[in-house]
Image (cartoon, rainbow, N blue to C red; front, side, top):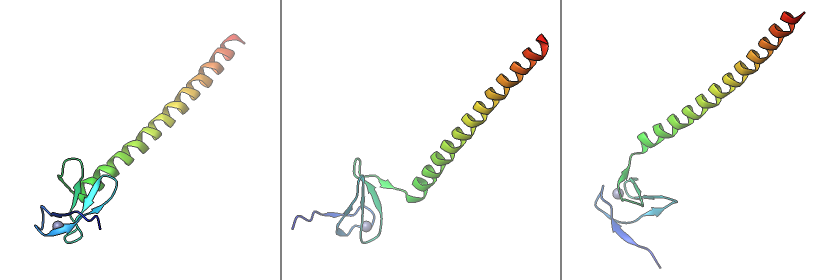
Length: 87
Ligand SMILES: [Zn+2]
């Protein structure tokens, strides 16, 4: 009914793009395009970027946890040292 046929920049066929949130996918050749600017979305680099941001997020969580444990250990150590120093 309301199908918008357009020419795929990759395979140059008249296709009805499969629409998702921000990406149009060509049903003929499987190429994905960003709907905002029409550039080809490279699936491999996109997955790598996602993996990198997930790894970076995990790294930050680990760093934060180590920092919190380190500060807690330092507070306990200083507390013990001060109480030992007094008595
Ligand atoms: Zn195509």
